[in-house]
Amino acid sequence: MSDSQGKPQTDHFELDDSARIEKALNAGLDAHPENPEMDRRVNRKFDSHILPWLFGIWLFSFIDRSNIGNARIAGLTADLGISTGTSFNIALLVFYIPYILVDVPSNLLVKKLRAGIYLPSLITAWGLVCMCMGFITSFAGLIACRLLLGLFEGGILGGVIIYLAMFYRRHAMMLRNGLFYCAAPLSGAFGGLLASGLAKIEVGGYNRWPWIFFIEGAMTVVFGIICFFFMPDTPAAAGFLTNEEKEWALLRMRVDAGGSTTAAAVEDETFSWYWAKMALKAPQTYFCSFIWFFLLVPLYSFTLFLPSIISGMGYRSTTAQLFTVPPNMAAFVTVLVTAYYSDKVKNRGYFIVMGSILGICGYIMLLAAKTNAVRYAGTFLVAIGVFQGSPMIMGWISNNVAPHYVRAVAVGIVISIANCSAFIGTFIYLQRDSPKYILGHTVSLGALVITVILALAQIAYLKWENAKRDRGERDERLVQENESRLGHRHPNFRYTF
Image (cartoon, rainbow, N blue to C red; front, top):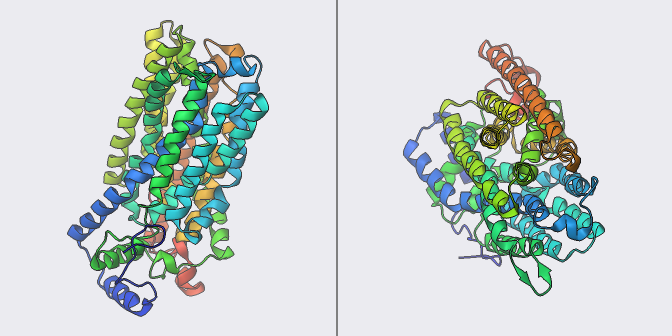
């Protein structure tokens, strides 16, 4: 049975039957049940019915925001008359202005407007904008399209993180973050291959670069429309689960919350400015914000300028496009492997530290090497070092704030602050610095050094706070405050470091 949107209805599992659900949940909570087989079964169903769509959304998100780099070496800047100066960098930068501003409000709308409708709407909208970029004939048109692209893509990352947190336990989140985020480096590989072919098309007066936008935008629109029919809004609305599986999905999330919520399900949680203030006061919100800020400086610049960096080694347009594929494929594999082991050991911070150190080594090679072979090898270390860090940060902040609306606000703040790094990342690789791009490589290296320092500082803070809770030094909160409003400050809640 389906609704008007084609989404499965829950014939026998009515959320209005709150008494029955609450009874089942409370019974389970009192018993602290463990049912590994049920857990695996529910996760398998979520993995097969949710993750492919999130993977595709993130894949097209990165392709459509970074294909301007492929279009650049296919003649975009020459045709628009912006081959010199900083006009191209400005076009990159303006994308991030609306992208940053919409994060928090967009996260608050995910549940209110139904995630299974809202997220597909965003991808369809930015796909249409990407298609329109093929028609631009001026710098002003390019700026307008980049602004609109940032507006519609701005809510997608936070929305996906919040969406995943509705379905998975905290320590099953990292693998799922990795499974969808690995689409980012794959987009670099796939986008490079696709662009090398599309940039050869000359039809109807549109030559080379417009076809990158036409075809990739059309693919995004088609995928977005398909998502409308298959993405459930919440676990309770997942028609592919049995009634027993739905009750277990709700129960395990409440147990996993560690006392941070008393709501029977995410549908029962209501927004309050109290939760927004809790997110704003949490130290981990700002630790993660600035760790990600400095990590994104090399990630964004690498994503946008890798074709230019490789072109600066002396390779022609098509060859440079193809040479972007291997480093991105190496990053794709690394994201999957590190995400898997991060959940295994229940740790995020040390993976960020080790990845940043690898990235530092890569930039040293790019700066100091005299041969193209060594410099190209450096791009591999940068790729595998910086790409795996972003899903770690997403998992880290999602794991360490609760309940739902605290997480929604905190994730939005983290993404908003972190993406301000675009104001640096888009202006450190300037045309005048080619082919060596010493400024860009140096700034990126320094940003990774700061990332290591901040990640180690947050690890120390979280360990310190967990130790105080283990010793019972936060138990007075149960007497002094309303337990249902403690969120992640609850004495039973343990931080993931």
